[in-house]
Amino acid sequence: MEAREEWRSGLGFMLAAAGSAVGLGNLWGFAYRTQQGGGAAFLLLYVLIVLVVCLPVLVAEMVLGRSTTSSPLLAPVKAGGTLWQPMGWVFVIASCGILSFYAVLMGWTADTFFHSLFFGLPQSLDEATTFVTSVSKGSSVFLGQLLSLVLTAAVVSAGIRGGIEKIARWSMPLLFGLVIILAVWSATLPGAWDGYKDFLLKWDSSQLRNPETIRNAFGQAFFSLSLGIGIMVAYSSYLNKKNQLPKQALIISGMDTSVGILAGMVTFPIVASFPQVQEAVKGSFVSTFFVALPTGLSSLGITGQIIAVLLFSLTFIAALTSAISLLEVPVSSLIDSFGWNRNKAVIFSTILIFVIGVPSAISEDFLGKMFTYMDILLLLGGFLISILIGWFVTRTYDNDLSESNSNISVRRYLKFMLRWVSPIAIAFGLFVSVYDLVKSAIT
Ligand code: TRP
Image (cartoon, rainbow, N blue to C red; front, side, top):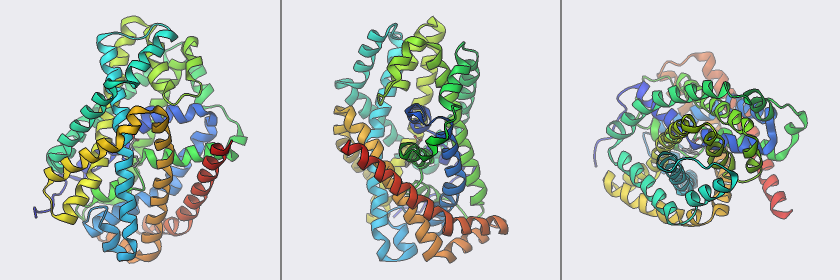
């Protein structure tokens, strides 16, 4: 077996972890979930869940990886004994499941990018429908899905330092810069204020009790942070003891949440500024991002086209750094469990994930269901992590954090939250999510 790799630096690790977190979940998913009507209540719940519930679990997931130096499949067993094997399976199944449809969405993004670049943007709603059909249906979908997976596989097979860390180092700063520029530009649109007001700032306290809003807030928090399925286990297993995990976790979640909100500040002014696209936004799974944005931007002529090209290339890069983290879970697990070399593990996992993704490539409806149901696995994974680290191997948590000299009161706070707040809150989130899904399946 090859010697286990290590990140070149703590910064490289953080950028890679932020690269995993920042992705379609922020750029497309945040807009999609916000326009389902939660408004400011959704935003508030989402940020609260990140800060109060997710942060302690994020640190716990990192501890699980670093203290065991094992892949997500084996880490739970190494930490807690064979009883915890199913948790490793949840991790591997969920990451393959997510990547299977994520690659399809990436393909749409690539298609939209090429379309905007070479053929221009749709000028009317009719054209928008044709546009989105050509992007999301037919053989171009498979081509996009395949291209996305092959690129992802190429980065992952180049390894931690040579592949993942390298790409995160240049793409993350670029991404931040671009999203800030676009948000500033969006703020100058005539409907900017209406956009913020209608989607991000509209306060309706009854939304705090709406199961759909609660499900969306939990789902968004976990999905966007890449939390609950061993991504951070995989990444932290290549991390040395010098790094202070709580601080890094805070920075990673700060970057992720700000990109989410900034992306909302890019999209909603555009949607609100162009009345003809508002209709298209209602309801559909793809609408805001893949229909409303290109159509709205088309009315700005060449500027609009440039913005669209920038926006969709940025989205693709963000998605790529997330997809590589998803692929790293099965890949590192195969390397760890069977002693395979990296290339063999990459090829095997990529083919498997392509095949699992075929139904999502064919049916938008199926893709939407995968996206919704995978949130349940993330919450379940997060719950199991907080129980394992918070209640069964608490000493591991203490030792790992004290060896890296993390501040004692931060450690105490995190441990308290991990034991008493996160599991209860996540169990509540799980219950409400399942209830909401069952209810909407019946009606
Ligand atoms: N967080 C990424 C996004 O926002 C997607 C992602 C990558 C993910 N790895 C994950 C989601 C693990 C859930 C779990 O687009």
